[in-house]
Image 1 (cartoon, rainbow, N blue to C red):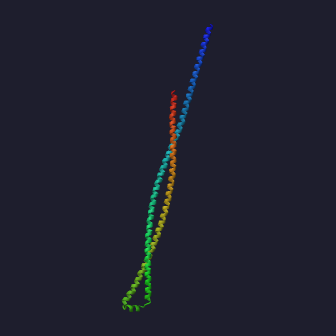
Image 2 (cartoon, helix red, strand yellow):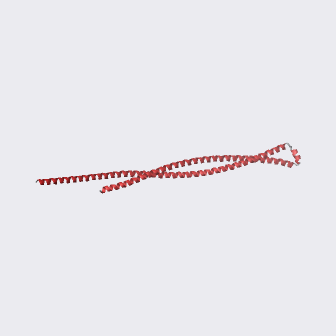
Image 3 (cartoon, rainbow, N blue to C red):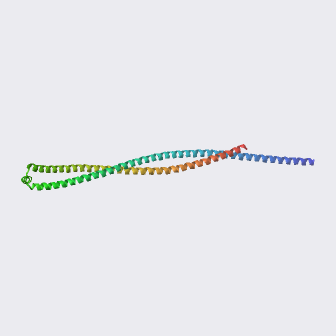
Length: 253
């Protein structure tokens, strides 16, 4: 009887041990499943966060890309403006060169006209002296010297005609000189206007070049920012792929 009781006790103890072991095993299994579920939930949350960040950086990269294109278009337009201004400057320089040549030509013409006036004045002065000397001589004396009235009258008329011609030459030369002086003044005013236009165009070109330089700096910074966004985006996409792989492995267990 005592032997049976001992066997019964032993069996009971073994049963209790088996039960305890099974309970522990089930408890361990439950803990592992919970940990796995929590890991899956964590990975899903990470994926959602990564998707939001990827969308954010995609938008930023697209925005900076569009800004870069806009800046490139503006810079191209500025380059076209600079070329157009260069062309205007060259045309203005050509006009200034022509004006300088005209001024030089007119100055030479004025010099020649002044020389003609000078020579004419000298001739008139000589003629006046001769006439003055002739005035001291009576017509009778002239006649007696020539002994011919027609010759005497011819000499007098010739002298008068010569003086009239010289006077007309002086008058015409002065008129021509006045016209040339007015033309020269007009050309000099035109030259001043062209030089003013040239200065204005040069200032405009400098402004365009300055703006272009600033736009290039902004473009460079924008492209650098776009590259930074693209790198971050690439890293996020790679991290997402790794996370999806881990999640697949967890869900496969």
